[in-house]
Length: 116
Length: 113
Image 1 (cartoon, helix red, strand yellow):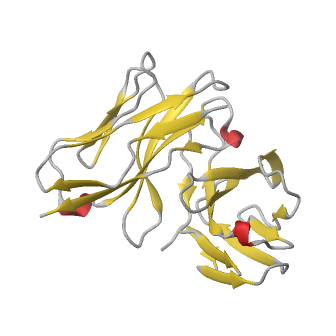
Image 2: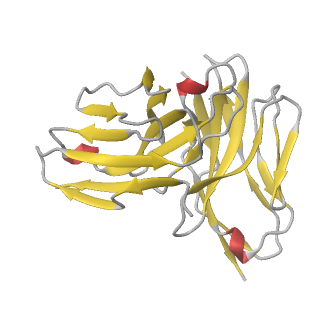
């Protein structure tokens, strides 16, 4: 079946340091995957951070970037300089461009704590 | 204003009882979903509805029954509750294009004693 594997947390970084959260996927039943990063800030619900629907393209939002690499089946999330407000749980997810009703496949989530 | 409302926020139930989790979305979407997240597990897709019709069911147990009384409502009825049903249940919605984003509600945290 389809699956998503991401960096196991918790991850602790200092403010202004860089952050990388690895995400790899297996899309055995999906010909055209959509890839997503969702984020849950403390006390809030799950919200979309960025998405990419075309292999080779890069998505960006709030200083975060992720490139959809079909060759390595990866979608790593990066930020060059984190802030304390980036403390959250980050989820990588996989969807099917041809079947919106199938639902998304999520990774376990990576808890990130940024310290001043 | 919240665009996807889930009620209640927290729910405590007794083993064997029945509960209904409420979800309403005000995004004008025609597709709605339920997901579940148990401790130390990823969010797991349960059901999808489109135009009030069941599209996909990934839940093996018939104890879980979605109910769609209106286009923007998708409630989840759970019968004969078990402690293993303890989880946070998330409702989501989307438009019906293949590349459309799913938007999530805040979740209902269910504890079955």
